[in-house]
Image (tube, rainbow, N blue to C red):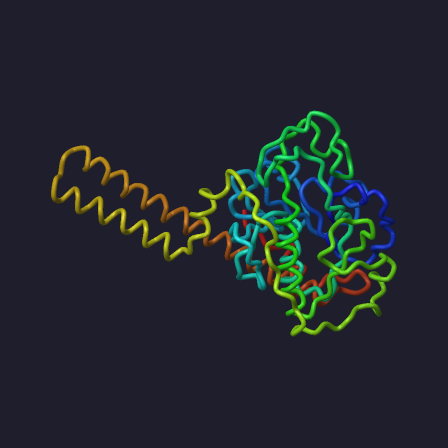
Length: 334
């Protein structure tokens, strides 16, 4: 089950979810029922992490987050740093780059697909936001009073949050639906009053009945289209344009700048060009060290994600801990 954080989450009977793995996100751990039942927690937004850094850093369960949030949350066992991008293309396997576009729930859908689940239930996806009419995706807003968009008025009270774009969210969800269908994975929305119409709706009791799982036809997928024009997200484009470059292109750009600085230094050799060249060399060294550190952290996270898939696919019986789960408990990456 993937839990949205809408007000309808307060209507959930959590006893119904015994034996169900639950993906929570952002401040979902503030909901008592969700906190007591969730299996995983994920966060992709720097504003969410930076305003409650200690809470996420202390979290002892499975935490999925993009590498760029490692500035706030250190790498440790069960805290998996994933390679991400800001485009819409979702990950199909642990070694793919995960999209963080539009919604952390889209991020969770990709995780559910990569971990091999055969059916996904959406709960708490009200898909209805009260925000300034002219606000666009990424605009910074301050919640001065109670938060009407989430399960608790305290969710964003006194905090900065970013405006949502439900149209872009629906486009991302349509891509996820397409990927799920290709991989024979069923996904249903159990919020009968939800305004999210991308996924088939089912009563919760029906969705939880294992016999209700349908076999899907991968050839019957519908290609999603982005409806409407709209304005692009503010504050993200430049930051993520570099992140979306492949490692090879980043190195090529770095070597080009270094070679250009070297040529200028050889031809002209004034002191200021020499200083520029020295700065570029130092930057190259620093970048190399950073990329090597990032590569090691991502490789460790991918290894743990594979172990998690193996432990999830063969649940231990009668309190016995599977070998893969035991490996995860004893592995460290401090």
